[in-house]
Length: 415
Image (cartoon, rainbow, N blue to C red; front, side, top):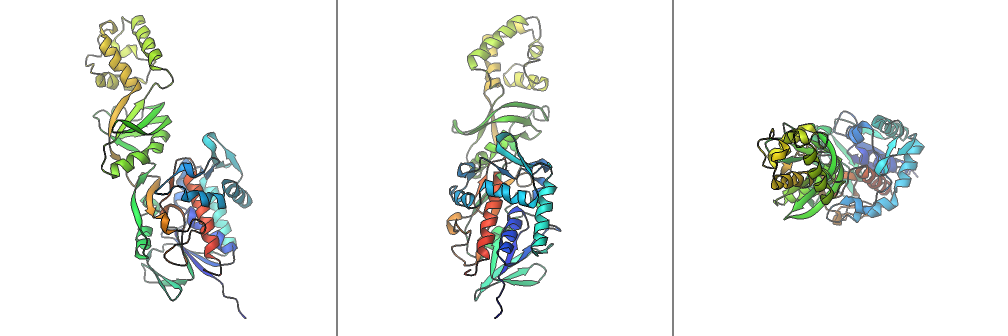
């Protein structure tokens, strides 16, 4: 008697899709990846600024967002950080842990991670069909029929949707996976950009484009703190970027998506208490009374910021002597240095976003298997689901964990 090989098709050859394919093939399934790009793993090459921050030792459900962030915990438990590191060590990736628990390959090359994944796919005889754009997925009499835009059709016993979201469309993520999921009866929670630069209101950003400093950013809604982080802050001609900005951007983007007013508070000098800063400024102005107001701040903050900050403080004549500063003007300067507020007008959008917030509703997916609760044999992996993580390797860990689980279960006989 001939034993029929389980046919599994993976839609999407990104991080989650490749892991799902490897996982399913290790269970003995015949696996085909359908990738719309000329080659798999295009987005993976951009991660970690080309170094591939492929996981984080602190990954747990508190690092994730969505309607039900705890959904991620089951996946992280079934294919853990330790399991991920061991998996890549087996493939040849030696690792190192850096600040914030970020895990990188010793080679500092994202291409190394992609190379070993592609090698394993080849070793497992996974078929990779590139330039394959999926137009429709139908299930009839227990079999899935996948129709490509070219008109070609393929059949499978199980399908894994790992087509990503909408972030970085240049890498192939155009939201098609959401359309496929909806046609199969699933709910897609409104998607918006995550881990993205923020656009701010103000006429002076071209003047300070490229200025970088360490400070604290905070998202405010109705005057209350909604998110906060600290690190390297970078002004651009549109507004602001940098790791802490990316971390709080999801909160800002969600509020904007809900048509709510959002403010960004920047604390430039965040290592000194307000009282001590007040004393420092008073002593500085007293000691440099013969200098201009503008020059008196040289050495305290970035020179390119000085004229902008003084104007924001209402001081138009910045060449005046420091001795002419009133107590009220000194307070205004201090206020900008510790509580500079901006109106957030938007984000840099999908082309610049690192991740998609929102996606296929997780209450329609089994967290232990990643199988659809609506369509037997349909599985999900990665960013297509309503789970997104913080910056620092958390989104790739979710891709690996969900991909491994989806692939393993898609290959089982009873699916």
